[in-house]
Image (cartoon, rainbow, N blue to C red; front, side, top):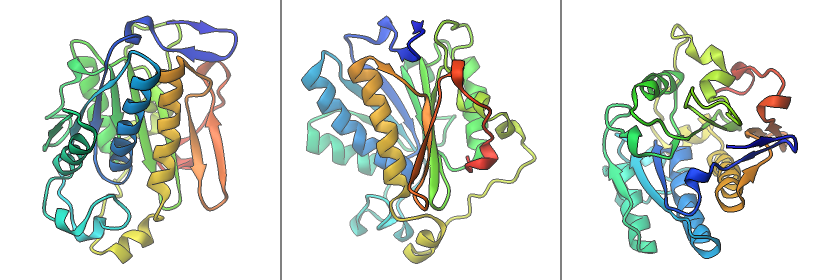
Length: 260
């Protein structure tokens, strides 16, 4: 993997000219939008390169009425598995054979088969649990992309979880934000009981915006072969998007500033 003075990070040769295996953990607000966008990314990669995406989704949650409106579900989906519902819908629409697992990460995930891990989880404890599993994998993913958000702001970040990887390695979310390792901090994961309450807790389009930016970064990496930043902070209230620089030029950033 190259890391050149131009300030760009380059896709490793091992991920070029073949299908990219993606493990998506979480099919809620950010995860559902990511999954739908990955179908578009797959179509684009097939059109411009020899690459495609092979996606496995993992989520143990079911669709509730509070999810309607902010997440891409319909009333007929209420009571059904989020992961299976969305994956089956995408497979039918795009002629794909992506897989869905109704289960809790990290128990239900197979990291050994993934090239890119994408986490769209609600809590720091979920990130810690996934981070704890990564060193135990026989072959950790080349990349770990994490998405998170609060009411009207969010962030996304891509890192390289293989510790032996030196040249061009990008720190993971747990390395960028070491305060996430503090297991004494309480998680804010209270469920919403209605659409109105859900919209009080999170802006209607915050997930769509964060996911769109993250997907654009993935397209640059997989479709164009390189990226010039590792992620970004996005604030819908102020209209600002602040990129997270690559390691050689990044400034110190605290997770408490952006609510991961």
